[in-house]
Length: 513
Image 1 (cartoon, rainbow, N blue to C red):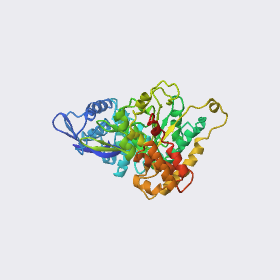
Image 2 (tube, rainbow, N blue to C red):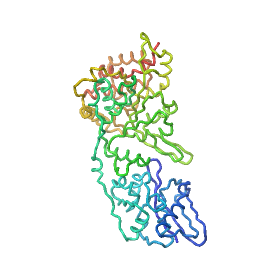
Image 3 (cartoon, rainbow, N blue to C red):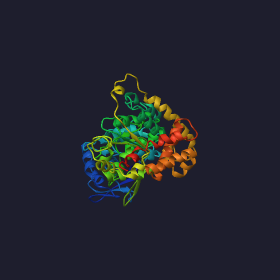
């Protein structure tokens, strides 16, 4: 007897429906075809144990399981429940006339209980788009799938519960979460605030500019000056995520298996802070079965790289293309997968190996050559892609002990939102561009015009600092953002001067010249 049921495979952040055909006929041996990996092949043992534990039998005949389409590689243990249901129907152990209305996924334990799967949200979206009435999956994943409208999500705890529902003995009530409720629950809550930071007003100003224009930032300062503390508070002044951004971000975390059991929608911007020992694959994504890396998990949020020169150079260099294209392409022999990577890069580093700023007139533990060698660990092309270089100096005792309340994140965010609103109006007819940092070169010429005084200022800075054409574009983008914060239609010399002073590392690279 032949049965047909449906599962799904995830490629990148999108899902592809897989048809699982099970045929039980005269003969012997078990065959699984359709390009399964080892984890899928091992489902035979898990399914057999789960069936026997729950009072059913594994057919001792010729059993053929076909996973179609056969040219797509099937990976993972998520097909266990689908295969088990198909096998029970093919062998006549259950009556399941409407099995083809269901998309079924779940990993079986040996006692028939269900373990969570990865990618439940993109799978549910694809199932809804293809007209399935029900999505049966482990209860642990049900909340993330339940925000999809137009399909009934059935949370299942065990194989026995799934069988009882299919046969009509004990119906499972669909779980439903209102996307708006999920979106506004604890919306934009971070637990940290800029009001906790005493002093550092110039650094806060740089972070405000970065948030207003979506710019990348490199903070340079000695240990203990507050670089990490400031970076962790940056998401609290970014605009709240839109519903579409929240869905995009949740899909990526779903594919990576990073969502909690009761999490249905990520509604706060992610903040990812990988250790400096991270590999290039872990950072950008990849592997035999391509998975999103840290830069994709930071999509629509912040990626913080602390102690930037301590990262392996190969790891840093692979970020060049994602910083420009805002997407990561993982190419393999059989397929190419794209992961979104629209993130803000916030990096920090010491100004020298000892952690102090270099001053040739003072006694210094590091030689000029040692400082230069340390700075050169970060390549020029990568620095060019970072819009703001901010010098972070230690907080004075008077500032640290001041009783005055510092400005809150909410107050700063209001100015950021005003600037972002100007940018949304500016780019409303341009697909894929939402803030100043996204402007390509041809658009910079149109949107960032400067007067003659500004041109002379830029020329002087270019010659004195030896800036590249890319750094020139970055200065204009930052100046445009500063003008937006001032509610100014034109870029004034004062805006350019402030943008130029955020190229501090270009000056430091020239020590001794």
